Image 1 (cartoon, helix red, strand yellow):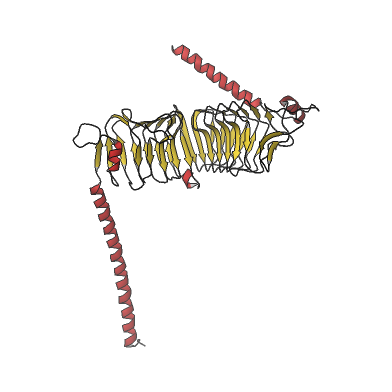
Image 2 (image 1 turned 45 degrees about the horizontal axis):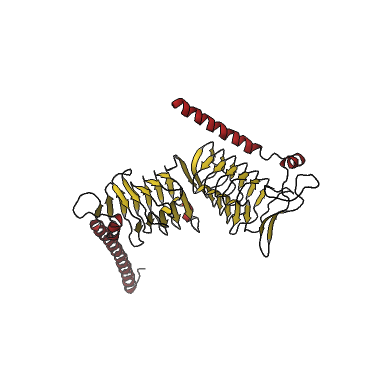
Length: 433
C-alpha cells in the first residue's frame, strides 16, 4: 500500500534539508581553504629579504637593526664581515631566517657580559652559515628559550668553555652540521618533550663526535674519544671504554633507565656525568677526574655508583640533590676533590653490605684491622639530619680480601689503555715530523 501523500512530502522535505546542510558544510570548508590560501599568499608576498653589510644602498650596518625591522617570514642575509654585537629575536617575530654569506667569514662576536651572543624566542627561526663567538663572561653562545622548531645549521660556534647551545624549555629544535668549540649543548626542561623531540646530528665538539641519542634501547657506544654524549629516554644500553672531555656536560643522561656507564674516562668537563630524571642505572669502574663536578645527580633514583676513581674535581666529587633518593654509592675512591661528596637527597645509601667508600680526608681509626673505619664518615650535616657513610674504607686491600671483591682493577686497565693510546699518538706525531 502506497504511503499517504503527506508522508511523501515530509520525507522530501527532510531529504532537501539534509542536502542543503551538506552543501552548506562543503561551502564553508571551501571558503576556509580559500581564506587560508589567501593568507598564505599574502604572507608569502609580504616576506622580504633584508641585507646587512655589503655595499648595497639601504643595507643595514648591524644585524640587530635588521631584526628590529623584520616581520614574520623575512630573510636577513648577512654579508661577510665581523659584527660585534649581541642578537635578540623576540617572541613576536616568527619564521625569521638569518643567513650568513660564508660561515668562515661572517662572524658575530658577542660583546655583552652575562648575555648570549644569540638569543632566540621566536618560533620556527633559522640561523645558518655563521661563525659565532662570545665574551669570556657570556652565559652561552646561543640560547633558545620557550620556543619550538628553531634550526641551527652549518655554523662554527666557538666558546670559552661556556655552554655553546643552551635549550631552555623548548621543543623540536634542529641542530645540524655545526662545528662547536668549547662547551657543547645543555638542555633544561620540566617535561620529556623538552628533551627528546630534537634533531641533533652531524655536529662535532672540539673536533670529536657529539652524540645525541633519544628514544632508543639496546645500543652500545664503545672505545671512542667523544666530545659529548646526551642520552634521552634510553633504556638497556651501555657506554664503555669511552673518553669524554672538555664539555659543559661530558655525559648527560635524562629520563633514562637500566643503562650502564663503565670503564670510561670522564675528565676536564664542567659536569663529568650528569643524571636527570633517571633511574636504575649503573655507573661503575670509571675514572672521573679534573671536572668541576665529577658526578652530579638530580631528580634521579635507584641508581648504583660503584668502584669509580673520583679525584681532582674542582668543586665536588659526587653531588646528589633535588629529589634524588634511594641511590647507592659504594666502593668508590674519593681522592683530592675540593669536596668529596654532597647529599641533599633522601634515603641515599653511601654503603652496601657494610662496605662504604674510601675518603682521603677520613680521620677515623681501624682498630680491628678489617679495612673498615670504626666511626662513620660525615658527608653532610644539617640541623635535622646527618648523611654519613657508615662503613668508610680505610684499606681497599683488606676489604677486597675479606669480601672477595676487586675494585680498582677495571679502573687500572682503563688507565693503562688510555696511557697506551696517548703514547701511540705521540709516536705517530713524531713520525709525521
